[in-house]
Amino acid sequence: MRQLFKLKRFYMFLCVIGFIVFAYKVLELRYDDVDFAKEVNDNYYGYELKANRYEAEGQTMRYLEIGCDTLPVLFLIHGSPSSASSWQDLLRDSLMLSHFYMVAVDRPGYGYSDFGKVQKSIIKQAKMVMPALKAQRGKSDKIMVVGSSYGGPVAARLGMEYPELMETVLLQSSSMQPKAEKIYAISYPTSKAPLKWLIPTVFRMANEEKLGHEEALLEMDNDWGKITDPVTIFHGDADDLIYFSNALYAQEKLVNSAKSFNRAKSSCCSHILFCLPNKASNSRLGHVISLVLNARPVLFNRQLFCSGYK
Image (tube, rainbow, N blue to C red; front, side, top):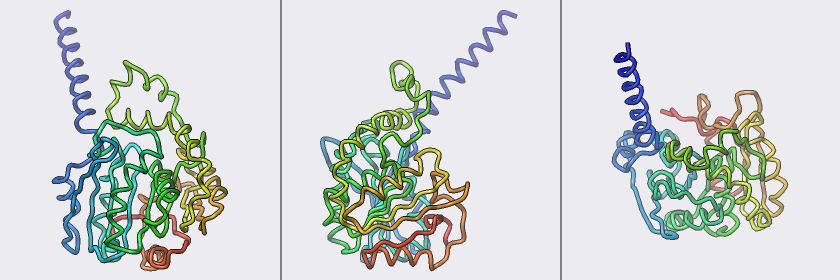
């Protein structure tokens, strides 16, 4: 009996070790250049992904590009925990590729932008992302910056400091208001050693960023008036992660921007709006095209960023 107990304990130990290895090596929520290219190069037009790197604030940054570079640019900034790989379906979408040159950046610490070295300051993040955005200015005079979730305040900060590098901004389910997002009770104990070292790196970074987000938002709270480019706010009223009040807060703060606000209603309109199933129509995409080409805000359908267009 004792031998059986020891055997069970040994297998339990192996399971724990196996989970830790899986968590640290597999649950990174990122693709390397080669694997990601395999995923998105299989698109209708045969466009090939380009991976680029540069140095910013002592860190290596990565951004990915795909499409026809004579088209208007969509510059995509992901949330947390995530990486540029989260835009996978969008980057290979035939309808989007027919109208846009798409660029997705790994925010500092995520993906392949020095994975594990998270940067909690939104101001510094924007400064580090800026060179990737600036590189697009030579390709197009129509650039739309899209910030999703925690990528939203980075997009807003870019609008505050570098309005000449874009024509318009879209804030999707974005965290803009201090103290207006869900923080789980487990976030606090897992932010301290030794528990934090048991958490997969990408989730540990996301937790660090979340707990420092109030301070980071307050650091730029007096600069909203600097945004003069058109802004579209796109938020679900049932968002239980980044509360809907964030959208109202941003709307109030954007005093010098021509802004458009779309309240995505119904119980299904939670945080991940662009993943909702929907049969896309050309008229919906026309809203985006009009926004980019005319540099003016347009109301978005809540299911704008659905994938699967063929």
